[in-house]
Length: 166
Image 1 (cartoon, one colour):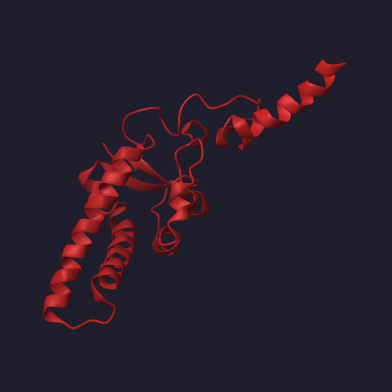
Image 2: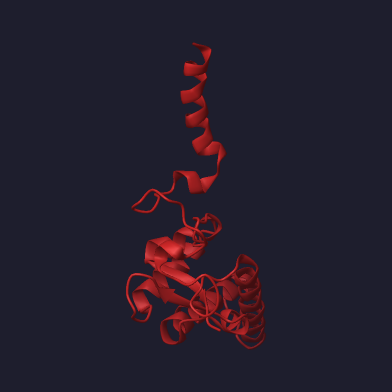
């Protein structure tokens, strides 16, 4: 009798104690993906596989350092409102949108061997998706909440993924 009461409780708590992957939809046959990116049709390793978190963070730090350097140069010659933090954020946003739109990678992602690709079609990311992706990144939380494929909420919303370019 007591076992029948605890068994449903164990199933309910297991779904949230098992982590975020337990709440995500499984494959059509109910199986869990073997590696990050499998459900997206991406390879397990090599080019076009999902980029690792460490490389993503390092690429972002490179981008920030470059953009804040440019912001400091701009502020040395032009008295812009907002100071270095605001100018650096605006420069980062412009560089990110333009570089993802035109080259499918930011300078930091390129240095780390990463790129941005659409997962719903074999076409470039495009300006609207690049803009919306960067806009969501400004809220900080969307990139931090990742699914089992290693994509942040900003990537899920724009149907993109950060992939290995080499």
